[in-house]
Length: 138
Image (tube, rainbow, N blue to C red; front, side, top):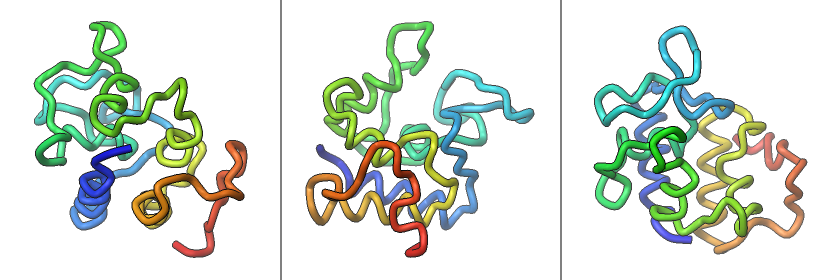
């Protein structure tokens, strides 16, 4: 894993600016319908933290590529390029950070990011299906 400090910066920006965090969908239009990432200024109004990275992130989080399942550069590839987390082989890290079953509370997301920054791996007691991890702490 890499660039987790930049992911925390994105989480802080999302929290500070009151941006929506909707873990169930990467990008949606004003009517909450899924849509593709177009560019940094027309990316949609809601996303999980991964979806916000190219929109509000800095440095390594920016990309000139269009992220779209239909145009070849996917969110999975962006995650691998940016955070060195492969959805297929790093499933625990992916699920711990970005799974759509997490709550939409930014405090929860920041706790998970900080845990990975501090420990370099998901908690030993984390199981893929247990999405209430440390819910009382945020």
